[in-house]
Length: 296
Image (cartoon, rainbow, N blue to C red; front, side, top):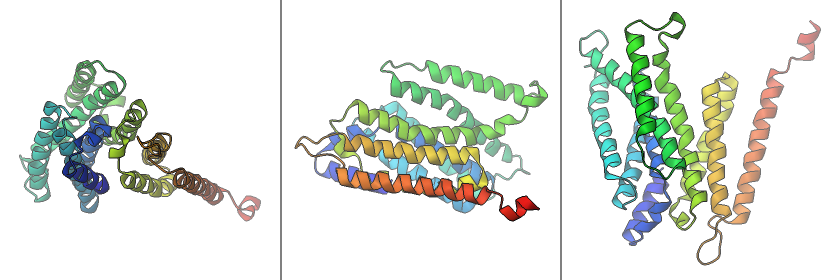
């Protein structure tokens, strides 16, 4: 993310704020909220290192969103909501980390309510983000419907009126929502890239390559753990980031050159395909019963 922040700052200093039009504020908002959900999740699990990584993600996504807003390509109300959420997260998470919102205390209910509220906001945000990406019509209807449905489910769950098979599932909602939001971020950016290529120079190739590498490195571990959510998210992120690189490769600058040189794109694609093929082969080999075991 930092290469994108630096590139945005350079464009601002050069008086080229229009370059930020290439960045999808919907996509970065999805990524931001995914980080926020996982921050609460890992703080609850007392995984401080993982929580720190998510906190950095919240801060860096907020920085990019601030730059997009300053350039005039993000609605003020949406950015205001980001600032309010970030401020609330800073205070509440800080209190939780310092032990002032422990479960045994009355104030522990504040953290539980915060965690549940984040899950509810995430449920409302995801369909709204999808609508904003694929439709030019502005309406809060998707968020209202999803939010009302989620609120009803949560209320029934807390009152014990749900069927036994459906009870207690809200605890997993933030994790699933965070995964879906992370999966949606590169999709939203890819749709933005292919729908209008005039300002693709504002995208940071370095950030895309780092994102693809980071997601790709998680694939082997997710595959070994047979974690469907983790594997789906990391594989999706890897392939959708490659799709963004594809959008840069097939598009041309005003001077006639490609935004992403062909030979670099070819090398990147070959390395990625080879890497994923090796992972699949090694996993199949590790899972294949040996002849000795079979004979026994």
